[in-house]
Image 1 (cartoon, rainbow over the protein chains, first blue to last red):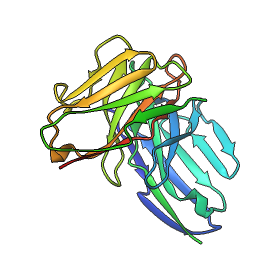
Image 2: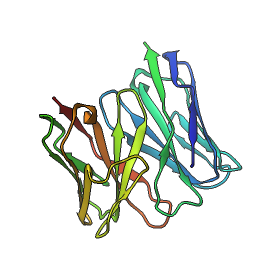
Image 3: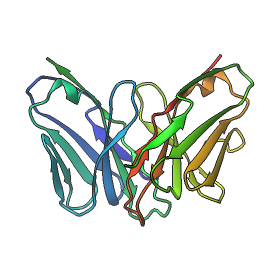
Length: 113
Length: 117
């Protein structure tokens, strides 16, 4: 079945440093979504990427979808303490028919003020 | 927009009892809802996919007789954990899918923390 790998598992940075998490799928994806889960909270939808090579920005967050639609990355510039949380990628298999998402294991980001 | 509510937010029950969790899409119609389970510091594991008016599709390893799912309307899905045991203690999260085709994003409910004593 489809597998979505995400690295790193943990990342601790000083406030102001940049942060990147990477996502890699074993199969070609129709789209990939990114979610953020604060400690004790639930996943919150951040963005969806659909097109090969797509790049989207949300303020300090930059999301990329690979040309082969099998990998993606989330980059945060100049992290802030409010960025703390676990970031999950979730891919939808291009051959799937029930719209289910396969989640990566997530990257826990902690920021030292 | 795209708000999903879940009730209750937390529940403690005794071993052997059943617990029902409700998931509602408040401002949109959700033809498909998903139920996930999340253990501490782990990822979300899909349990089942629920389509309005039809039987749920369960993931491999999930007991359909233990985790009963009903998707009675376009805005409500329920998960009933039957004869709960301590190993069923977990964070259960539902999500509702908006949009058509294969591109609709999922919106998550706030989750239900179940503790079985």
